[in-house]
Length: 452
Image (tube, rainbow, N blue to C red; front, side, top):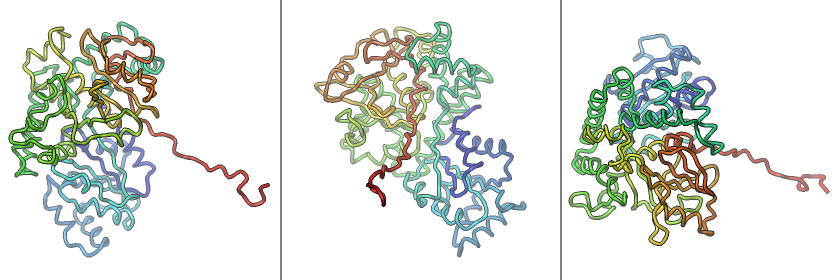
């Protein structure tokens, strides 16, 4: 199945000469598979070492005297001829050997091989995985399959996606037949989600019960990791995680700390929220006091919404009757929480930093991001009242904020009313944070020797 990050891994294989590569994210999102696919596609000579399947390999990184000895140990562990300048070492499950990350500088600097690493963040402090010296490691953060990857997996043609993308860029309607088909597939995605094994099971069987079994097994794996890596906090981690759907169903979707049994302050549980976020199994969306760029300067870390990392894992907690109502666009069901979880997941997968705005006088806006150099408010609407958004109107009408445009993600086709752009919710896949051109040449006219 197509994954967008394949291109970045291939780019590293072909062109990078001075960095190790770390691919990180939650369990079961396809990191190992994707690295193998890239190495095979490029016909690389590579060695794979998995530190969970072969725990004895962990000893390689204990009590070595220098990098030469470490390289010798690695060569003995491979049982194959290594080719200087060609062989790539693939270290999988590197969270089992934290030193391997901090050693990346020396491995890259003093050995003749390239190194790609894969690790799950479950139970690992983020700083530990990112402690390698700057300049010696590139990091790719992976997420579950996004909607575009799902569309490709079920067979939507590239030219259809390109046409829809063009319609998004030009703020015009999509062909009605295509719009209806993409919305129907979007409803399926809400149930299947983006965990690769769940998507694969759906494609092979079209059986949503079998998909649900896969999803339930993934959640059980996560919960085993809760106890494996953080035994003292196991019960609280489980409670915080299990409470996410209930918190999202509230009118105000902010996560209330006092709903966690026996806990009343953010400080008493903040490590649990940080842990779940770093593990990649939950997505925090922080409150900002002002919708002004840079948003990070206005964030309040103690006030946030918390979403599951995969919308399919969220809807798997629902009864089968509710799932069928989602698939059939039943008007009697409130899809607000499900739609918002999808949007959080999709925006995060496209490199957007997530915030929301809530002010007593202005009201609440579901998401605030920085997009194409500007602050972009986003409202998410699942029902008929998608044109009711007082808080959004207040932001657009506030001259202090100078917000020119806002998106209202909903079920209907594209339309524009002033600065309000009503966007089909599947078009969230095109809201991507892109890298800005940061090559700036100084203007030295009149400052150089001999200038008049």
